[in-house]
Length: 328
Image: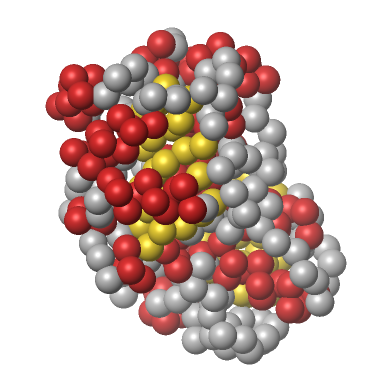
């Protein structure tokens, strides 16, 4: 693979805010090791251009959101007939490299028709890639592309979770959390059809346990009013820092900044867990399933996977949660 890869296209088939943050270490790796002039980023959930809106503060400087592809591109059979033509929306006739991070063969066959010099995909254990480098697909999303290039270039570079938190967010977070007497909690899941949440009564018990030494600090959107009321009623000194700021700070980056100043953070598998993964603080993340796919790959993320403990997250007790935290 040649060194001059000026235009790289990265394809993310997950449309959520958490999915975008999950791939940020991969985007950092691409920039640090492949050094493209322009990094084009396509998410199949058109309309949610996260790096142009809510995640603007996390966006790599050279990242350009692709808005010209068809909606749900790659998931419709007829896209196979038009994939060659999408290059017409760019000022060049082919991408130097396309990185397709998903594993569905149909999607890969469609994406691979986009004109390119090189192509990387974990589909069929990377056998669809050019150049081909056979290796077993990594389960964890953050490792899939990084492991390919590490092998190709004989490197041993880990995912990079170091980001520059803007000074204004750090200053605001320090006002809200002035010392280490705070413990962060994120307990709500944005995907209502998946079992991801710990029983609220058990969370209240955990927060109450720590409230004797720390201020239980909840990262939670205002739309969860019934949950907020229960916490306020049952948890001593419950604190909701995001309610104390103006609209200019009501962004994911504030959560990352706040999470940097707590003693530690307790979270479920949700978008906020990925915001906290960039906080360089200890984060206890409780998964129901799929930790092997979505867990952050940094040393400060400590994972509890209920499926590996023959349990379900909605059956997890406060005693089990506290024991896991105290032992780790």
